[in-house]
Image 1 (cartoon, helix red, strand yellow):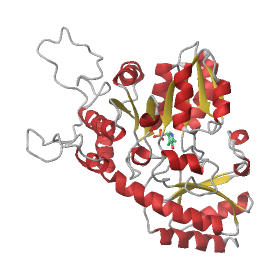
Image 2 (image 1 turned 60 degrees about the vertical axis):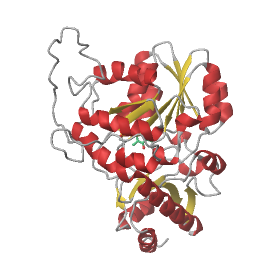
Image 3 (image 1 turned 180 degrees about the vertical axis):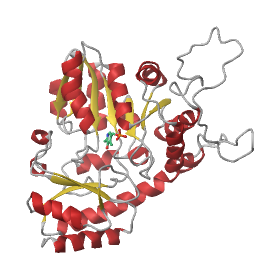
Image 4 (image 1 turned 180 degrees about the horizontal axis):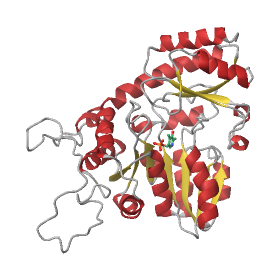
Length: 391
Ligand SMILES: *Cc1c(COP(=O)(O)O)cnc(C)c1O
């Protein structure tokens, strides 16, 4: 990589790549190896140093290339890449929470985060957790305790698309001496920049938009060298959620087109959200790019576009919602978001987080990850499925 100052889209292509010294190939190779040759004198070697290439659970060549690229995209000092988004999130909690500490978290958050903070960490390790509606600044302020070590928010939130004000919450965290970590998976580094808004850590499920092709899992935490190094030493080396070099390589390839994909996902999702909002049988649409979204103004302030996930509900019962999902021909009924293909999930009214959902979500909702197909084809698919269901 040369020293010329480059923009985000150029960095997606060039940072972390180099000419292969052995062959002259213009791409760094995939190195599927568990071990690396030790130095001649290994007597002073720190065997667990996460920055030495010794053993692939501690770090691997392809992992370091990806860390370099993601650091450039989030303008972070350092990055740690792990096996999944949940491995990255639990690494943050494992590293920065202990038995005497208190954590504040968005009440509707990724299901594993909800379970870790609502149940496992409090019950097994005595960590105190308060779950709040983090789109409401007063709820965060009121939840602060002397031992609050971490505020963890997810924005946009999964599956509500609820937006939390990163800049305002970072001020509260700083005043309380707590760290702020932001799960920015729904936005990707192209649409939102939590570290620039005052967050200490940003977390991504690489499985989603960053890889973008639905064929590899990964997770990342980014922030200062000091904080990320602590995660590497404590959680990566000793908890063991190492990413496969092959997955790191696939994600490195996927991220090349991140800006193009995020523009298309966002443009298509806005068009489809507007179509759904105008459709008579649609009960509600939650999409941060719509004026009707309760935090639309905050979304406009901290995101450059609004990404590809729409949640909505129909004026219909559980059976008809199921029939609708199964009548779709292009859009696939499957979990995950941020793939090239459109994905939809119907969650019925007995989700374990139901009591925390906004009112309109409580009777069941559809989470729709708008893919990269022609948006008119997607709208036609929705139309034909509505028709089949008499909606
Ligand atoms: C999918 C997702 C995760 C978990 O990531 P995995 O790679 O599936 O472990 C975390 N946060 C958000 C917002 C997600 O959508």
